[in-house]
Length: 375
Image 1 (cartoon, helix red, strand yellow):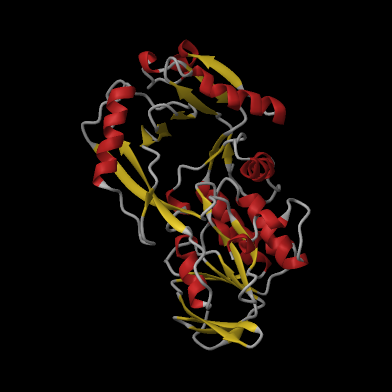
Image 2 (tube, helix red, strand yellow):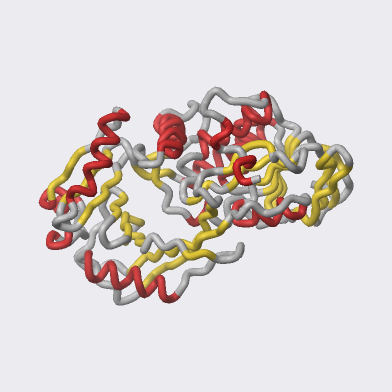
């Protein structure tokens, strides 16, 4: 983008999975006079690039169940030209509980049955036989979802952006939106570190910074809260051999593990409220997950080969915020996806694009996502 002022129908602030998926689905709706701004050197630098993303078919929240079901169809059968490499590995997901807590799994099994989702109840012996790091004494039973699995985040993000750019969408990295300009009709432009873009539509896809962008447009923050999550890659013990097994969550003890290269990745599934930032792993959380691994898996943690943290941003009701702002004309929200931004991006990107293109969508009742519920 040149430093001189120019015009766009839509300016999207945020080059993570939210902004990228919207750009893709706008292009599919033949809306391409779009500028996507990302202040970092690469798209997906913050939350999207630091996720151990999975597509789990079942969710106990009815809204997320709808969004994940719509998105899962995309992961299983993406458009033929979307990517040269697979974006989804249907390796399954497993949730386990401690002995004596097996009843906790009944809701998942019943919900899957009602929704027509394949689900298998695994005994302790089955779980331990298939997941080589579990300790039998800490596992009562599990629920395995065979059609769920791992999302290839880089390929998904790249696919969205590649197709959007090919259709004519402009993407600029290392460009920060510094101010939002308004006139009597609402939004009239976005001032950036490389000039001003005249526009009547600003899409707030800024993740952890969504409230800051809204405030710069003259709105009162709605309470988007970034939550830090920590992930480590411990040094693998000599006996461990890389294998293909599912993302495994221990619901009783509060952690997950899954294969990662020659080792595993693990997280205490923490949600620590922080200010918007380039998230760094917390030393106490690192110690916590190392302790959980040593107590409840067959891994020891003599050292850690890699560690990182990402931000998952939540609205006050923990549901996504998608739609036209009722207070500041020209502001459109695509934020607050929490920990499901990647796994719901096909649904939310399409919903947002349809709302921008047509004012409505037949995928969902737009009122349940509207920012108007907070204003």
